[in-house]
Image (cartoon, rainbow, N blue to C red; front, top):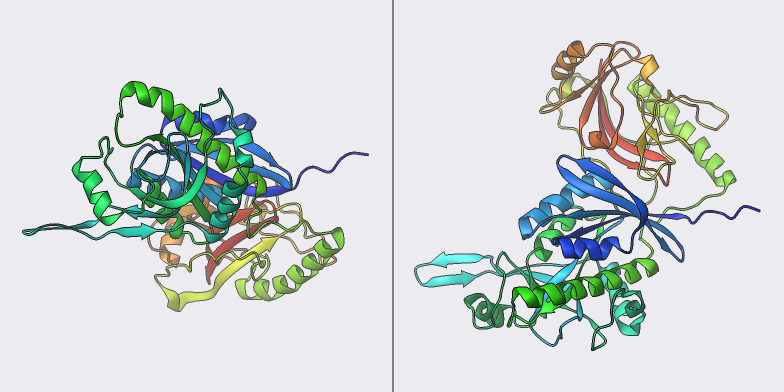
Amino acid sequence: MTAKPDPPLGTVVICTALETEYHAVRAHVSGPLDEREVRGTLYEIGTFPAPHGHWTVALTQTGAGNTPAAIELERAISVFHPRCVLFVGVAGGRKDVALGDVVIADHVYDYESGKDTAAGYLPRIKTAAPSSRLLNRARQVARDRLWQCRIPGPAVPDVPKAVVKPIAAGGKVVADQRSATARLLDQHCGDAAAVEMEGHGFLHGAYLNHQVEALVVRGISDLLSGKTEAADEYWQPIAARHAAAFAFELLARHTPAAAPMHASAASRRRRGVIAAAALAVVAAAVTGVVALSGGFDATGRTTPPKPQVADSSAVVAQGDMSAKNNDWINLAKGYAANSIPPEPADFFARNFRDPSSMELFSASETSAFAEIDGDVSKQSCSTALRSRRDQSIKATPDLIGRWVCARTWNNGIAALKIGRVDPDAASIELSYLVWQ
């Protein structure tokens, strides 16, 4: 009897700043790893087996600084739609930590926020917080110390500990406890156990995508004194390995809040009947543009943003949709929904697997597709469609968040915005509007 494959837990994006940190994380990811480039950013994608399933891991190196961390995280979220995101790396220790210890941020200070006045610099410290569920799991992992079993490489003289404490983040490398920045931290971020350069920007990027769980994990590679190239060469790899070991022990135990439900065939059939009923209502309103299903599945995700309509008086139908088709999701030449991450696939629409056999929108039943930027209107879509007549556009991951115009079955004009593809639930979420 063939064993059932481990259920997918979803995708986790792990960001690092330094090459040393990247290698420490990569050592825990099963291969072979696939390389993917999105708008200039390189990702390596592999898997991590956990006792209750497996994670798809997307790994990237952001470089140093809060701003790059925020930008790269936002980009990664738009591409991979992860269930959780982690920043794993090294930091300088400030208080109650030793070299090689691991600090998990219960919040991160942006110590560089402030106002420069004639009377001097007035700090206005901002904070960013991680996800409560990940933080609670981190506290559990820190308590029992089983994470230390995941540390690879040579042993260190002292067994490291993990603590959950505040971290401070800013654009400076703090190399001495007597520096002006160190004194500022003493005065305004006195409880920060560590200082680094990316954590606040990273958590702020996650805050803008509140459905994504986020956490910062740091290994202590220096104590803000005696920071030399030789010391960094020795301690940074050790600290990075410790942080990575903690992060993957956390993933091994964590179940995401919106973990996919592995339904029985009977429940899938029931979902198909519900989708078909909603389909009839939507198809009547949309007049054959996208015959999918209405309403989202209850996974806690937010709906896609509403279209920005330039000529609303001419719109005959507008709203959000979630399409489900059990094993396949199709939009033009669309997604193979059983692949993780989703991959483009050349096929036309298949039927819903329910008695009504309602078909999805397919490239064979429309005259044109066209991408569009800027304001969305019947005129702008018509212009775009004229320039790309009889061409189809695959609904690849790069199109997520972008507008695609389409000519409908009855010569109407439609605009679709792909909000999310969920291969685990075999669903695609989008916003739509139609002009007659």
